Image (cartoon, rainbow over all chains, first blue to last red; front, side):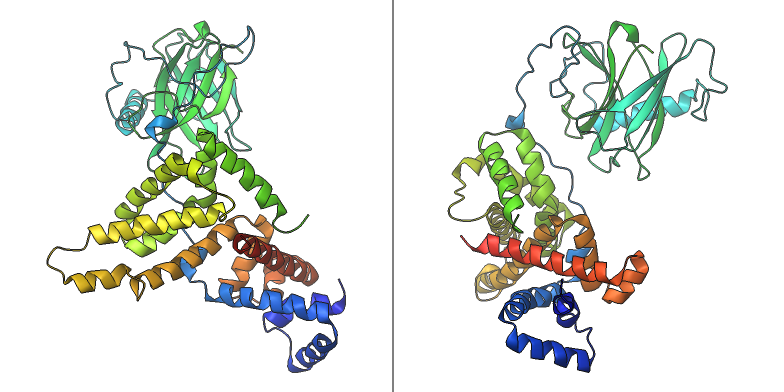
Length: 244
Length: 187
C-alpha cells in the first residue's frame, strides 16, 4: 500500500494534522482513484460514527424456538458399526415418569438429585478418591459442539450413577439446557438427565443411571430448547463410548 | 474475491436451505440475523417480553414464507428486516390503548413520524447484521474506533499490534462493509 493509501483511514478518521491533511488533499486533487476511494468510504464512516452504542453492544437474541413443523425427518438406519446420526427424535420411554414435567423443571429436579445425593463418586474431578471399580469415560466434541468442548463421565462401580464433567460448551442461558443420553446404533435412546452450563462453559453434575449403560453404545450430550418437547433436539455437542 | 462475493454465495445456499425447509437453514438464518432483528425489536417495542414474542413470530414467518422470497427483488437481510419492521408495527398497533385518539395512534406508525423513526432503526440494525458478517478482527477494530472512541494509535497500543496493521485492517474493514452495503442495495 502506498503512503497515500495508508493514510486513507487516518484522513477519514480525522487523525492527520493540518500539514498532513493538506498534503493528502493535494494528492486527492490529482489521484482520481484515491479520491474515488475516499468518497466511497466517507459516508460509511459518518454512518458508523452515528451508530448508537446499543447497536455496537447488542445483546444476543433469545434462543430460537423451532417451529412445530420444523421437525427433522427420521434418520436412516445406521450401518452396523456406524455411529448413529445425531439429528433424530427420541423414543419415548414410559418408565421415565418425569417426562410431563417442563424441561426446566426436570433440569432443576435432576440437579437437586445431584446436590441432595452428594457427589457420591467423590468431588474434585480427578481420579483421586473415586470409588473402586468406577469407570472413567471420555466425551469428545461432535457435530454441533463448539471447538474445544470436551468432557468425561465417571460411571460408578455399580453402574447406577455417573458424574458428568464437561467444559468448553456454550452457556446454556435461559430457555436452553443440556441433556445426557444413552444411545445405541439401532436408534434406541434414553435421557439420563438435564443440566445447565454456566458462563464459564463448565458443568459438573451427578446423575442417576436407571439402566445398564453397557447395553448402549454411546453417551451423548445434546443442547435442548426449553419448549416442553421431550425429544432429542438433534443437536449433539459431545459423545463418547460407554466402554473405556 | 470481491468484498461481497462470499456473502452472496453463502446467502444463496441459505436461501436454498430455507426453501427446502431445512431446519439447519432456519438456525443459520437466526445466527446470522437474530441479533439484529432482536435489537431492532427491543428498541422499537421497548419491552423485552414483547420483543422476544415478536422475534419468534418473525422467524416463524421466515420459515413459513421462504418459498415466496424472490432474490431478484432484494437481499435476504432486507427481506428479514422488512418482516421484522412489519411485525413490530403490527404489535405497536395492537397494544395502543383503546381510549387513545386514533390520530395519535396513527402517528406512532404512519410515515409522517412513527414509521420514519422505525425505518431509521431498521437501517441501524441492518448495519449491525452487516458488522456481524465481518471478519472478527475487522469488526473488533471498527468497534474500538467507532464505539470505543479510540484512535488508531491507541488501538495499536492496546492490542499490541503495529500501527500499520491497524490502518490496513481499518481500510479493509471499511471496504468490506462498503461492499456489503452496495451488494444490499444493487438489486
